[in-house]
Every structure is written in structure tokens, then in C-alpha cells.
Amino acid sequence: MNNLRSTLATVWRIAAPYFRSDDKWAGRGLLAAVIVIELASVFLTVLFNRWNNVFYNALQERNQAVFTSQIAYFCVLATFWIALKVYQLYLNQWLQIRWRRWMTARYLGEWMDGANHYRMQLLGDAADNPDQRIAEDTQRFVEQTLSLGIGILSAIVTLASFVVILWGLSNEAPLHLFGKDIPIPGYLVWGALIYAALGTWLTHLIGRPLVGLNFQQQRFEADFRFNLVRARENAEQIALLHGEPAERKRLLSRFGFVVENWLGITAYQEGDRLHRGLFAGRGDLPLRADRAGLLRREGPARRHDADDFRLRQRAGFAVVHHHLVPHHRRLAIGGAAAGRV
Image 1 (tube, rainbow, N blue to C red):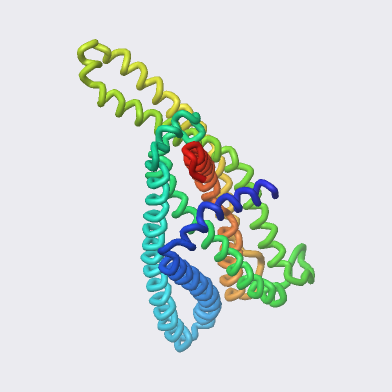
Image 2 (cartoon, rainbow, N blue to C red):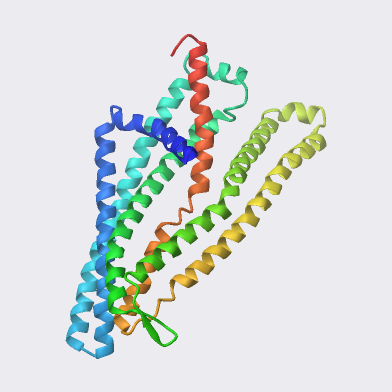
């Protein structure tokens, strides 16, 4: 819990200054618009869920009038859904580039101010490859902070919405085991919550080692690129001294670290795919219900609860966090070394 608080505090310390900057009103407005669209999407998901019930009941009862009206209703819902998702993507990307532009300008200003870039090298390698931190990790930080933040909000609102639906379904379709109805109030809610909690715990357990492996992968990739650039810049000396065999051996040695670490990532990702495949299959099997409409409504509700709570981007976000924090700290230390707070 303390580690989570520390991580959230660090993320807030890096993210919050943008929303207090000169571009704060544009940033706040875009963020508010993205959140409103996400909430509207959750509301549409609930409407789609209810539509499933009415539509498939009409099919079962062969009610042509209701069937025709539900087709028209679906077209309306689908139109709103597509429009919302298109504009959400557009506004999200607009916010990302504005936020990234501000962070890049800030870090570049601090890095290139008063020989700070040189002092950071003298302070050690806690902030390795500052060029990569500025070019890549600011982009990933913005993208994944928005994705995770909006995803968590959506998961909470979706949970609250579908708890009501599942609780009602529990009363309409009591649990049927061994030829008997077992009256358990809200059993679908408890089943969905246990299902989601177990999936989240397994995702965390399997994916936790990926944080360190992804961190090392980016580091090895950056080191390999740096050595390729170094060989290109020193091409004349290498050619004059006939150093190609030695350079080739050195570069392949660097690339060996990339391959070895990648195989480790692949092994853990295979376990994650297996776990998600098993849970995805389970999510498509609804609990027993007495009517086709209940069966159709219950399956999507459980899938939404389970899928929304699996934070599959945690490993990537943690890597960006581990990269940006030392860089942020070294910029401050370098500035302080020059007599600036």
C-alpha cells in the first residue's frame, strides 16, 4: 500500500504541473471532455445491454414489430457510439500532444540550461540516456497515464452500473444447483466481483516480473542503438584500423543482451496469454438462467466487470515511472549543483 501511495504521489508530482501551466485551460477542458465521453460510453454500454434482452426476447417470441423497432433503436445507439469513440480518440490525441509538448519543452529547458546536461553525466548513470527519457518516455507517460486513469474511472462507473443489473438478474434467475434453487441475494454480483478480483490478482502475479524485464529491455535497446550510432560516427577510424571484426563482435555482444532479455519477456507473456485466454473463455459462459433474455444480459455484464479490472498496461506504465523519476531527480540535482533550486 505504501508503495502504491508513493507511486501515485510521484505520478501526480510529474503530471500535475501541466494542468497548472499556461496551457492549463486547454488541458483541463480536453481532459474534462474525454472523461464526459467515457461516462457517456458507459451509459451506452448499459443501453446496449438492455437492448440485448429485448431484441433476443423478440427473436425467441417471433415478435416482428418489436424486432423491427429494436433494429432501428440499435442503429441509433450504434451511431452515437461510433461518434463518441471517434471524437474521444481525437480529443485524447489532441490532449496527449499538447501535454507532451509542454513536458518536452520543460525537460529540454532544464537539461540544456547552464551545462546541466554535462553535470548530469558527472553525477552518475541514475538517469541513463536522457535523450530517450525526453523523446520516448514523456510520450509513454502521457499516453499511459491517460489510458490508465480513464480506464480506472470507466471500470468504477461500469461496476456501479452493472451491479444494479446483476443484482436484479439474481432475483429473476435464482442459482440452480443439483436440481434445487438456492436463494442467494445478488449471487451474480458476488460471482462477478470474485471473478474480477481473481483475474486482477493473477494478472498482477504474472505480470509483475515484466516491469523489471521491460525496464531492462528498453535499456539494452537504447545501448545497442547508441553503439550503432557510435560505429557510424567513427566509420573512418574503424576503416583505417580495419576494426570491423572487433566492432561486429562488440555490437553482436550488445545485441545478445537484447535477445536474452526478450526471451525472458516472451516466457512471461506466454503465461499471461494463457491466463487471459482461460478467463476470456470463462467470461463467455453465463450462469444458468431461465429465459434467453436473462442469459443474453448476464454474459456481457460479467465480461465488462472482469475485463475492466485487468490493468494490462501496468508493466509498461511502471517502466516509464522508473525511467522518468530518476531523470526528474537528476535534473533537479544538476540544477542545484549550479546554484539553482
